[in-house]
Length: 404
Image 1 (cartoon, rainbow, N blue to C red):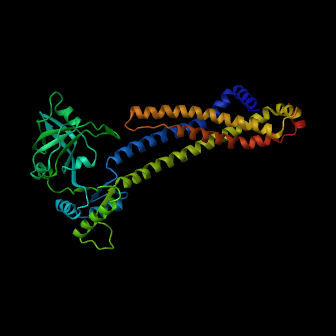
Image 2: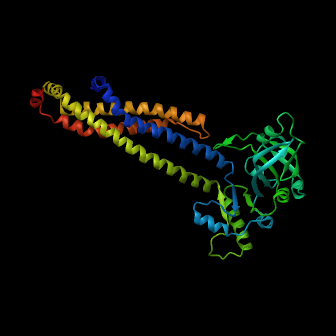
Image 3: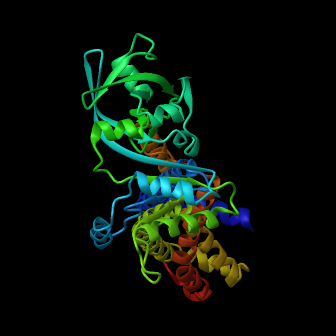
């Protein structure tokens, strides 16, 4: 019975190729939109999860601003007191449970070397523990030591973009660069980090925070990176660090923290809220397109009923039951929608691949997404074909046979 319905459905589609193609457009556009956009969102989610997880589940950050999601929060954060070196030392001294404590400050500035100038370099002032807390790796040379940090030695670690731009043909170790007019000796070359959302992660210079303060002054508020020994003790360490900063600022017990707390879970929550908006927009657009495609399929089925009334009468007169007729027309509608769904999956896959290849945005097409897209297309065909199928199954065979 299924094979017979499949054969009849294909014959009907072949008999009206142009009409079938035009009716497929709505389903094709909807499925293409779903597959392409959701693939990009999946790719971004996977990529962002990898970046966020570099922070580590046991590491959190105390910062003046934290995660800001509105203009009001930003204006309120501007009024907060800056975090300085004394705050960092207080946390290091009064939170002995912490495994590592490291400050960080950063600027985007120009770097000079070998008579060349490289603009928009990410210059980071950091403690000696910082690279190990965020998963940075060294390719050649070494990180600076605690004694070099305490003495504000002018030493630097650079990324591959800085090396390729300023020292393309020589070993950069031992070479000199200038940051804000101050010379720094290169002692380390970071491993390649690649690109993140269109921005290079290798356009980087890391220097001791004490040397950073000499170059840029003390106007920047510091971020305090704190690592707990393990996951169970993370909240204990976080509470202890919060108490230290709150007491140094004289914060009342019933007042909110005058600083932000950032960890991997908070960043993941923020990212999901951003991508959820994109997914919701895609859902609305795809739903409208699916409705249009479903209406077109329903119109096709109603037109097919008028054209094939006599055929239906003959089938009923020779023993076909209502459910047989209903199944035949439902099968045609679902098959039409699935063909559009398969075309849409192919176009969506191609679009996602193009986006991943030609743009900084990654794309990830999963088998589950393909199955979901085809199921949505099939359900749209089922909904569109139900009313025409019920109507045709109720035709009186005598009346149908008289139809010319």
